[in-house]
Image (cartoon, rainbow, N blue to C red):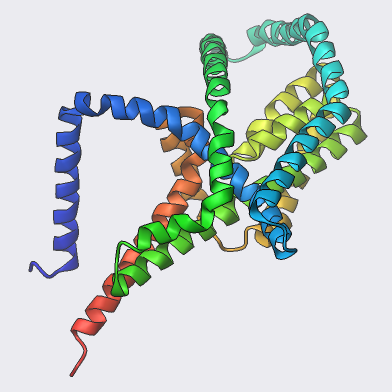
Length: 359
């Protein structure tokens, strides 16, 4: 019985639960480590994202005999030049739209409240049960609005903390660009034989998954944001550039990001002209269909191959555990875990095959 897979899996799960229980009981010992890890994780992740986004540039330059220090310097010049060009070209329209949005904020709120008041006036003519449902929905909306205000304060605090932590990002970024070939060998050289080959293959697969996901997700987000910007510009939607930039960042969240990004567009379209809501919905639907049928299959391929239901479950769980940061990193972390488990299973199958081989 001890050789059965279900028995071994059960023992492993029980041992893992016991270890977690003991760690939770003595968590005060590890709390300083947790604080340090939280301070390092954000700049480390951002540095890793920048590395994977710029590593193709470095590889291209070094194939043309550019030395390592020269490729790093050129990448920094490109990044600084790109930020400056973006702020010079896109900055003034963004500033204008932000100022317009701030100036028109009271007007937009007044129009939205007017629509809500008209809807509430009409509820007297509705059946009693439907009226109760509307009252309950209105109470929930008010409760969510209060929570949203608190979320905004928390978000701003986290944003300023992130700005302070971003000082470490260039350090991690330069370190990764300079010594990225040395990371994997430093790990798998501690092993020998088949175990060394397994660790080497696993690290290579992890690198491939992270590279494919980060580069592909940013490219997909940029394409979708461009489609959305063109579509909103054609229908004459106000603040189209701001919404497109918001869409760019929201599309980094797989599957549900585009639907989150369309919410402010619908609100602005409703206050500008209710007929525009239909066009916003059409543009969003077209953009997402183009993404799911053409862009994502060609850009991402089968590098992750995760079912949409799994993605939704991951995002919900990660959001409750780690908030917005958890939502962002949930899918790549799952991809890495999937690679490790798959390689462990493959190695176990090889061991079983060797052990049962007829001599």
